[in-house]
Amino acid sequence: MLSSLAKLRASGPTARAALSALTGPLPVSRSQALGASERLAAVTSLLSSLEHLTMPDQKRPGGLNDWALARQGHAHYGRPLRKLLDIVADERTSQVLHAARVAASAALLLPGDSRGRGAANLFLGLSGALLYPTHRYGTDGSDQASTMVQTATGLARLAPSPAAQDALMWYVAFQSNLSYVVSGWVKLLGQDWRNGSALTGVMRTRTYGHERVWRLARRHPRSARALAHGVLAMECLFPVLYLKGGLLTRPMIGGVAVFHVANGFVMGLGRFIPAFTAMHPMVAYTSTPRSHPAAAGRDDRMPATAGLLLAGAAATAAAVAFHRRLRTTDHVYGGTVITRHGNELAHDGTVGGHDDGPVSVLVHGLGALPAHFSWYTRALNAGGRQWLAYGRAGYGASRRHARTPYHLGESVDDLLDLIGAAVPEGRQVVLVGHSLGGEIARRAAARLGERAHSVVYVDSSHPEQLDRSGQQGKNARHVEEMIRTTSVSLRMGLGILMQTPDWVRNLPVPVRSRAMAEFADARVWTAALREWRAAERDFRSFEGPLARLDTHALVLSAQHTVDRDPDHLLMHQDLADAHLPGRTVRSVVVETADHDGILTDPRLAGEAARSLVAFLDETIAGEAAGQRPATAGQEAR
Image 1 (cartoon, rainbow, N blue to C red):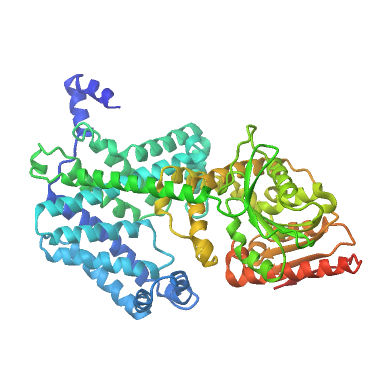
Image 2: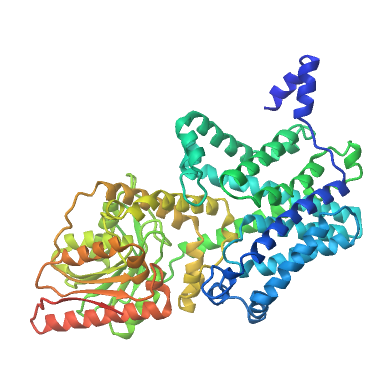
């Protein structure tokens, strides 16, 4: 691109004049950049606060921003911050703050260059940060961007030296570059953006769609693909405007400004226009060559400092990732089994020779960990039941060495080999599988014969779920994109930025640290991506019916799963019905539980685990008495 522009500059005077108008830096002075940025950000906060003031019902009981409901999402904050948010969320306090924000924003739209404008900007930035958690709906990236710009411009207005002002302006410019670059490279991971169909897909959605634009995109697919690829290139390559003395500053800033205007009109994201363009004056100022009078005396130490900090952060991230990898692959307890595929499975448990009862073998879900079953293993220990937990190949300390392409049958073979090697001969097994682990357990039970005592399906997958459930079939592509994005991010060393999820904090204290290390390790997500692709191929080609199993069965369903997708409740019933008459079959819906909470929430997992232990006690006692009870039932817990 730069070489082509250089050739055009060497052409005739008319072409050079046109090129000069379209290319080159956008020279603005320090004070001009500050003024333009603060006014554009003020437009965003003005519109946002007016919007909240004109819709007070959203804050009242039952409204979208009812604090009695929204505050539950901030329960993990410390008490002082929760108390402060309670005060800010009060309807009267909120109205006063928004009215003050309207006044401050309007004042910043007036001419002026005083230090008082810095105080107004800081007020808008701080009040925006406080109000943001209390407005669960009606806030978006535009409010975050304006809060950042207003805080930086407020500090710059009050800064004691031009060097400090320049450092803050460089900070805003960096944030602008990051907002586009990160967005672009994340889009690049999505198949829709790579093949150019993203525009058509977005325009047909209810939230951001536009019927006329969608019809145009359908009518002109090549133009739609070119536009999608153009947006992708513009975002990914945004920092090139700093090359060649800012030669591409005008087309890049102009392009993204048009992009935001189009989004505001087509997708209804009106506040995005002033919010993100508020960063552009800072970008224009920092990309202007210092030889230009407008940028004379600019302090450019910030980029070098940022580079050193970035290098230090990268080294720290690599060290953290290395430490987590060592922690994840270190298998101090338990043992390992080499399977027929050459995979090395690390396992742990309480299997011993002093008992002849069935061993519960815990099969984790896709992208999950053996630690997910921690509350279940505690319940099994308390009930005197032996168990065996393991990580599938590629998870934790387990390693995949198979040379052939992965398929679900490989995991089934591995599970059978693990049972053959780690469970004493003659002992039966109870296969307890969560999510995809439930399907792997079901297939393994069909091949175990009499060694299979029972199958426990914990909110299990079903091989027909992508065809029978419109919801799951539609979301399949998004699941793959999420897993792939996380896998790539972790391989890039961004695991240091990953926050500890709630389900890890809900696990027993002794296992939390290792669980977080495994969850933030790229190997888990690489294995999950491999399994998801194989599962999708397998499920799409499944022709049924389910194999009939001569074992007992317990089907544990999470209420949120079956409420959100009633088709899944019917599929869970199919899993129960696949077990032969004469065996004990139970179906339990764990109330208020979701797909992960049925394993990790202390209370809900405790209820499910008690159902498991009671089921084992019943079936084992019945078999000891020589009975094969033909009982079946469904209950809610």
